[in-house]
Image 1 (cartoon, rainbow, N blue to C red):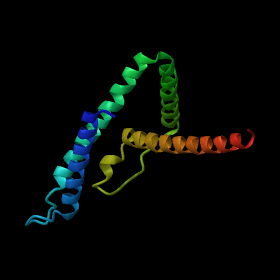
Image 2 (image 1 turned 90 degrees about the vertical axis):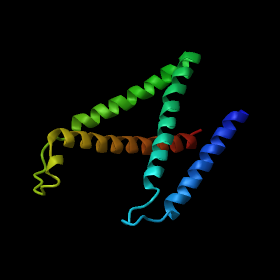
Image 3 (image 1 turned 180 degrees about the vertical axis):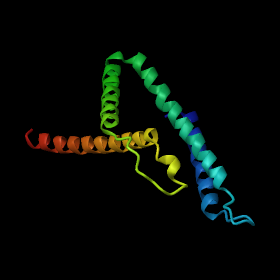
Image 4 (image 1 turned 60 degrees about the vertical axis):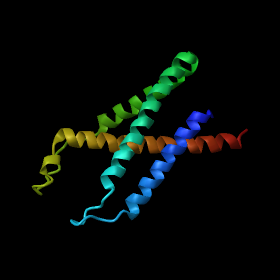
Amino acid sequence: MSKVLRIVLIILLAVSAVLGILFYAGGEDISGQPVYTNTFIGWAFILAGIAVAFAVIFPIFQMFKNPKAAVKGLLGLLVVAVVVFIAYAVSSGEELGITNPELMQYDVPGTLKYAGTLLNSAYLLAGLAILSMIYSEVSKMFK
């Protein structure tokens, strides 16, 4: 690892550690609100943005560097798209009949279909992960 990258990572870790300590031990203001919560959440957004940027940029570089491996990556992306499509197809947009006035805004077919898609996608991906673990262990027994 290059020296510059190591220094940047140490700085990010130090800032995160200081903000984490301030978040948990920072106390409250006069109104009872935590003092450093907004700063901590802002830092979390910055770190998430950096992670997303690198997660998007590096695969693009890698695609041009090694096109054969890019086909495998695109195949994985296609599998995820198929899983999301299946999850969307089996999701229901049927209204729940919520009577609580504060929650009625969420009893909309589009919102329910979206939430169902996310839940079904999570279930399908978890099931696929479990099946792949079982397959991996069973295939090792026959080698």
